[in-house]
Length: 97
Image (tube, rainbow, N blue to C red; front, side):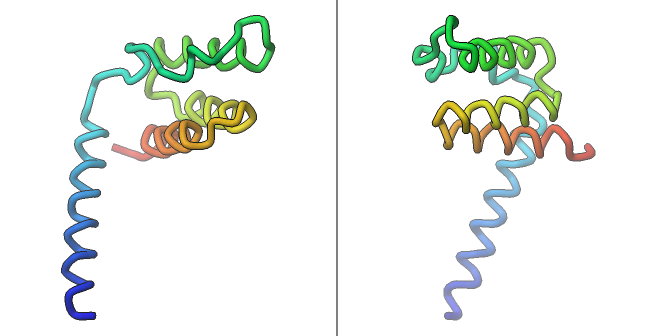
């Protein structure tokens, strides 16, 4: 039990540093191709909405509502891990600097 506390603190410290680094990163994650877009069909209304949201995020990557909308759309599409990333980016974008 005594070993668990230092390990937990180390994990939290690394996670905190990673979070700070991600917040300071000015690179837009939507500038490079996203792997799940190859599974989208522009003729499908849900897929078209996902593509429009990604396009809007390329123009405004710090928009918390857009990240949240993308997360919700990806849940509907059946991409829960990618949706989680979108929700996480929404929280980070909404956090005060």
